[in-house]
Image (cartoon, rainbow, N blue to C red; front, top):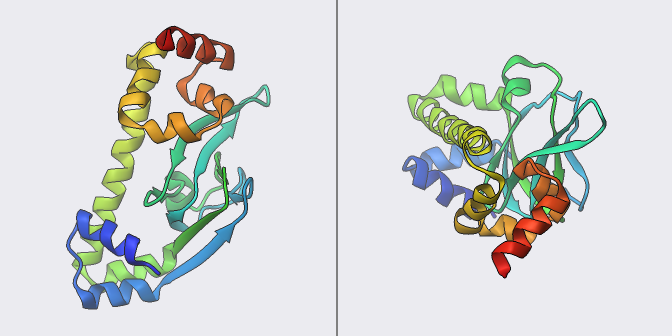
Length: 191
């Protein structure tokens, strides 16, 4: 059941069968329907998630009530809201499914107990966190460095699953442009 997660962890840091058995013992499985929230603004994120199947998005709502998409997650991605989880404060973001999804959940308190047991888990946790932080930094740089057309072309080249599976209004928000501007960019590229 957790084989994809084990393979993903192995790519980050080789995990022994004994360490995997301990790690597997703290995992919980959550199934969510399309449009269901894994986390809502104002709730506290209590752990880390691994997306086994489905598609999810992270977004927040600005002062005008407009949704601003900041991340999309696909099979074998880790998800979390780090500020909320680390400081036990209400989240400023939402995590919502875009189709029926299954996540594996690791409760923060159980994860901390693993960290106390072994340097291996501390290193693994740090490496996962680094990977997630790099992803967030890339997105921030992506928005400030590239033009809207370049952002779109970057996704075409590097994250085609976004182009193929994310609704246009969410994709436009993620790119920092209007849906109409995205449609114009797509039309120009296809001509």
